[in-house]
Image 1 (cartoon, rainbow, N blue to C red):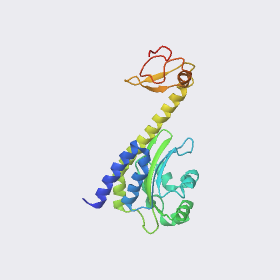
Image 2 (spheres, rainbow, N blue to C red):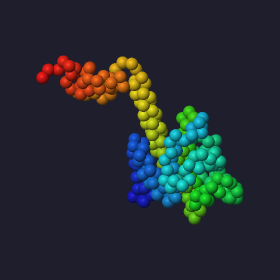
Image 3 (cartoon, helix red, strand yellow):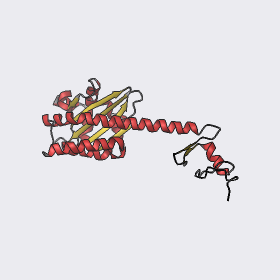
Image 4 (cartoon, rainbow, N blue to C red):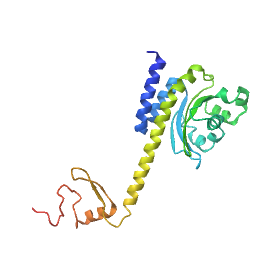
Length: 232
């Protein structure tokens, strides 16, 4: 199996692992960076309503991450190109600007200070105000993305999209669960959830106060009795 083919399969596997275990996004993006011989790789979600980036995963981005999120993304001509084309449209520098224009553009001046020059990436999806992006960057010595780079990125693009979408949905589910838990703690009566074995898996704040003062059911629900009525 050719090396690039083997690397692509490994990247795809790592992306789907990251989709369900977000802590593994760094491993997936390291695989992506390595597959392209890049200096940096990122995947993030931009909220066009708030201007914030609720999700950011990156390799090689540590020095410039905060500045990019706060300012540079909004002057990035490649990101602007992606926003004016349908999701999945792959962008690279020569498709966006000629070399001389790159030399004069403040975004490329910022890249130079990060020891970077060239770009290959796409807007993965649009979900209301949320837009997912992924890209690879190279140093000046690498040169522009070539046809093989573009072909490989197009092959990986749908897997990047699915993985990042799944991570977004996981975070939404976690947020809804957290909000529900918070709401249940506001009630002025006890709410207790038991599993199939009768073990308490959730108790709201009111129920926990009852357990704490020992004038109701015991927190260890296996006996299913009040401590004042349980036999010897």
